[in-house]
Length: 453
Image 1 (cartoon, helix red, strand yellow):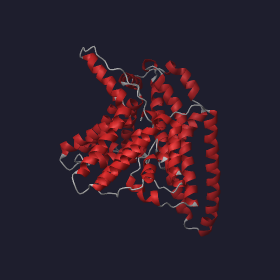
Image 2: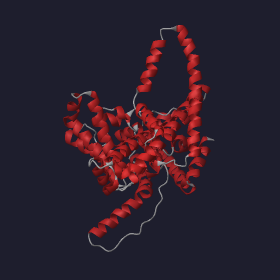
Image 3: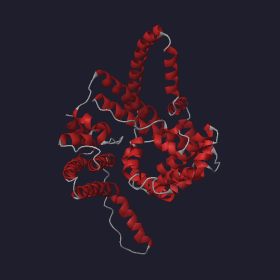
Image 4: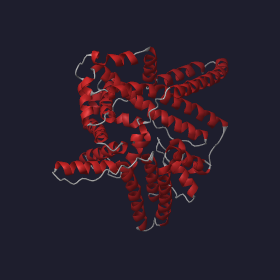
């Protein structure tokens, strides 16, 4: 039933590429069986290699086909060759980056004997296509849910907890990310030469909040939906904006992707076991691939390489210097580097990004964009921005733990507080759900940034 629901869910977003998802599932089921059958002889490695080539080939064709053709034509033009290749106009299948990486991890883990092969087609198909995390992550490892595919703990507590987590994720997406997107998209739509410094900074701050609450909101919804069906997905975000270094940022940001690249690319390349120079090369390779994974554009590559460069600088000694600084200064350093890299991530091309950087540091008058200030600077935006900034820290967790500690020494208060807490949770979740639904109905603006990935 879950498999049928997942296929229908995917078909609703684009029927034409549902067949590609089914073909991918079938190929990986067969490849997994062949790998498992030949683990004791060289054929196992051959079948793994074929499986990797087919998966990456499909991803390369559908995600990077247009990009490759465009760059070949640019190369021809720059060398004076008049010949050009017609743009194939390939549409990007939604979620292909996520389900391809999940399939690859399954094949590699079977070959490495980290997990037994899945003999039931329906179970493997459900793993690859499970709808809560199919189109926006997190990237779920087969080994983490192999047992859950066969036996799950479906109970009221899990279902209620799943509803709470889903609604929190929905609120992050609809009530925070979408509202920040209005300001961010406006700032990045204005021609860079006509962009005031104040609006440029508001735009990149808004985008930094948008992308965090969008990504983490979808992860929360996926984790909540999974929990409602008895699945336990690993956490994907851990307050990345409180990081004190770029290295720590990547331990907190999109954890499932970071761990995937660590285990299936960085460590196989040698990790940090082959000397410093090889470690730096491995880091650059990983962040190059991380950038291109996010989208078929050189902007994404540059974004990834900036993070890779600062990871290397921190390994070279910047981390020791940072540790001597006041902690808020460490946070400011990290957030500043992350925000500057987000400019490349969000801009349409390098010219746009360069123009946006000039606007950030040029002290241009707000008179250039007075109409934008008039539209966006209101009490609603102030309130949402304040909630967003506070919620990107551990403030609510700290407050909750403090209250819990205070009550722990008073038995009567604990009994009273449990009932009050449950009542407040119900009111809060219901209220947030009503607000989010109202925003979705009233406001037509609901950007889905994962189309680029």
